[in-house]
Image (cartoon, rainbow, N blue to C red; front, side, top):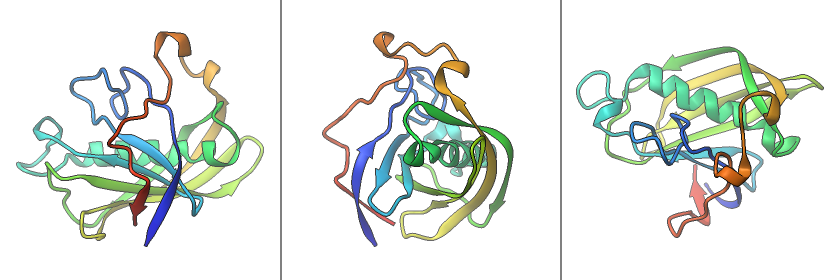
Length: 168
């Protein structure tokens, strides 16, 4: 199914997952969809491989964990972040390098201080490569790290490549 993008989420400069200034990073982009889910798009390169031609499993868990952790911004606000309390993943298929990968996540339970979420990494053909679920503590971004919006550490960068619709 194809869903409209409602909003692009902010990224930071040096984050391994989303940082545009991190030359070794994934450069993932995060989009809030009309169906209430969050999608990350990224293209793994050779520097992200485990076995030849395949994304390292730890990096697959990293992008899935971050995407699920960001889902709280869908419900509460851009000021809160999910800090991982526990996370589990199940690997179903290898993830090839060099093609765009989609990560889809959602909140499954939400209380005042903690939320739970689940998500999947999808291959180009829509096959589920990795499933994950986690529990996260809600924290104000200012309590997590040195974030300075004026210094371009945490902001939304719109680009011509940003999609209007994402197929899941």
